Amino acid sequence: MIQVNQVTLRFGKRTLFENVSLKFTAGNCYGLIGANGAGKSTFLKLLTGELETTSGEITISKGERVSVLKQDHYAYDAMKVLDVVIMGNQKLYDIMKEKEELYSHTEFSEEDGYRLADLEAEFMDMNGWNAESDAAILLSQLGIGEEYHQKLMKEIPVKLRVKVLLASSLFGNPDILLLDEPTNSLDLEAIRWLEEFLINFNNTVIVVSHDRYFLNKVCTHIVDIDYGKMKIYVGNYDFWYESSQLALKQMKEANKKKEEKIKELQDFIARFSANASKSRQATSRKKSLEKIELEEIVPSSRKYPYIDFKIEKPIGKEILKVENLGKEVDGKKILDHVSFTVLKGDKIAIVSSSDLAKTTLFRILASEEKPDQGTITFGKTISCSYLPQDNSAYFSKEETIMDWIGHYAKSDDATYLRGFLGRMLFSGEDVFKQVSVLSGGEKARCMISKCMLESPNFLLLDEPTNHLDLESITSLNKGLENFQGELLLTSRDHELNQTVCNRIIEIKEDGTIVDRRMSFDEYYSLQ
Image (cartoon, rainbow, N blue to C red; front, side, top):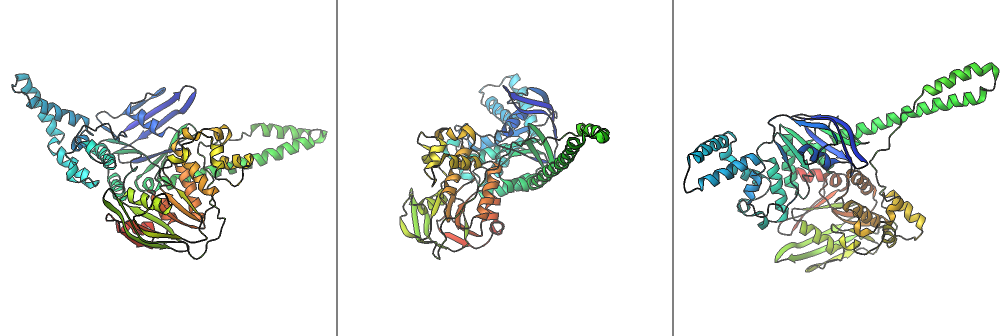
């Protein structure tokens, strides 16, 4: 159990949260949510002791082991994959290494013998003899084959290193599990396996994630960081969202009634305070007025950008035809005889275990890369807007956000541009920031702004939710649901795929495709 008692955290003059008291108990999974910068990752660092509170205390039940998902994929380059997983239980790993060191002695002292006896007893109590097999099972379940288990971390692909660090955090049945964005860079199969693992995990989990479907699937509680406070709600993300919106509505309605009452009293006082026969009533109402206190609705730290893709040109009958497309990279065929036709009303999710195959297809469709074979034919009425996964090339110049957005706007009117940027959460002096120093989330919002200003009737979106917070993802989701054109989309966001797309094209390992006209949930159930 974790007990948080009257915890306050300040950085200089900024208070991140104040007088927070919470209890996290076994058998529950807590989804930690809040706007970017609200303090989600910082709170996890408080729980691990990496940061100290300004005031208040955090206590963890005696003897309980805390496991944390590590983020640095390169920190363990010189270690074997299996060792990194076992190191998730640091005490067990240390015992293993000390045993190895003692057994390597050419001569044994009596002290060595006693120490080894103690270590062997503790090793057995911790189920150490099964450590390697348990670690191997975890790795295999996450899609890391045995051929990688004895390799050094630096010798395996970065995509697999992410899974190794996840396996390390899950290893050895920790009492408390802290996961910061665990689904990042995971494929669909690994995400689904993790969902089932957490659903069946009997200890305490605290997870930060921007994946709404994942939060809905695994969480029993939501911890909301807002207004400089933290509050626990029972239920998953959707239940929290509906509850919080209802509470806000009720608060607004209560205030509205009070405002109406105050205005009624003010009008009465203004009309009759000079009338002697009514003066007593006016005084009485003035006293009533003074007793009414408006419950201030504190502005939420959450801000939702306004995302709306308007179509400038109507679409004709012909949209996009891809015939016999082929592409080889480093001697491997990643696209092989790919053919499909986009029809009216199609919103297509492109899925694959190969990120390279998906991104290459999008780059070819956007004319940023040439295929080895095949043809691509867009209809004459099609105006296409492309959002790449790697947007760094768009932000290489030294210019402000206002200058940058001006390249894509049809009007150079400063008032119009500032109003547009304000709706995309760039307000005040923010519009004069240099684009080269923007955060990942700010660049993502700029790229979405570009797409909106181009007024396309066809969208190519390669991982559009990358770097976005939950509020921006929600707004993008609504914008794409309302989009009246056609689109091709690849995204790890389950809910975005499910609510937007009506057709699934899967790129197989051999580069061929399977084309299914179905919802993402239907496709997911087949996997």
